[in-house]
Length: 483
Image 1 (spheres, rainbow, N blue to C red):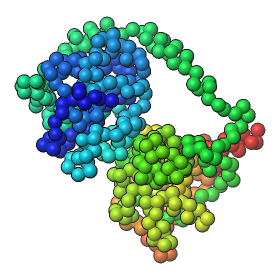
Image 2 (cartoon, rainbow, N blue to C red):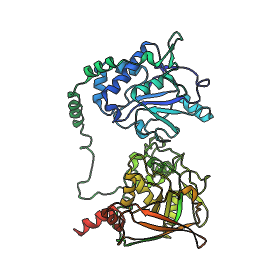
Image 3 (cartoon, rainbow, N blue to C red):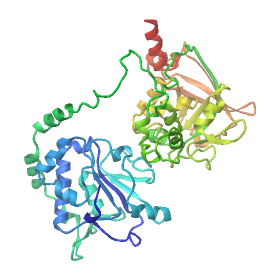
Image 4 (cartoon, rainbow, N blue to C red):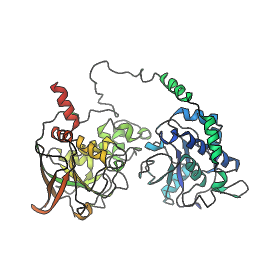
């Protein structure tokens, strides 16, 4: 990462409220554009020539998707100026995009403890959901690699960098973005000179020489011998045969009532696992070190970890009770507040099922299968939403969960649901057709309080078959065993 000697050393106490805590040139997709990387390198080179430096509170990094990018930048003579601003290559592939940014600068951490600032990330990735880049950062902005360098130099986002100075040179004279921005001819000329098509074949051949995968100890048997001590890989309960269903007849308890734009990051996180989280405490109890828990995305083979991370995003609000902490729910019989995963265990013996209500675009963002698997693991059988993201809807069906589209006048915020209500619905899977309408009843104290006309969001006969089987995995297992 960045060295202090390459940074402006200045107290942040008198600096902006919205400082840049992380500036990361990252993402395997966006760094594959050589012109974009060359532009960033030229901005860095020009900035260095003007005597600009990155403030000490900004954590900088460069993580291209391929070593071929490093070869091109070196050929262009741009690795050194990038390094002088702290943009050293920290690795190749997923880093800040997936939450692997590591700790913030000590100066920033100190100010966060005092509550004196609101940290911001600027990255060239493609995900900026709250908490995704870093657990302590809710505000993240996406930009080109060159703009990442520019905002790193500025040190904050509370300015118009197209008109205001981006920093001062060694003499205290203001320097503007227009002073350090390269012209199109320089970018095009250097991009052409730096590009070598044979770089890709060379780095691929070098990668093939790494035999670590082949040297891994693995059983030679036709089936996998599960290691009960592993904190990375455990057999999930949804990989089992189930009885075929012809009728879905449930009276589900509202578990979560959510608003619009609930992303898969809100549902099932991919970023860093905090040691004091439910998932973190579980891993530490299993013997893992608190400073080596990694990210949720690396633990998705362990369902115990993943379900403990469900709906724990700090920006999530459960409208059943706005005072509920993310990841917590109300036990419907006792009123006790407990983690979602523990509630699932508590109610499992009662054969109790849950419903989730959400607004528009439920499941938008990354097409993460764990967002649907996790909902299955906490006992969710039906999900109501005003609209579903296309892939997440299909993933819910694949887990045997029924997606039900609410009418536009029936937004979750207007339903006045409580944890003591029941939502009753009956669906005949034998006669179900795609986009069929049906009625769900909200029951309170034994009386039907409201009826909702909903659309069963299945699109094909194949999806109806998945619901009958209880999900795509039980269906595959049944077909395999039958053959």
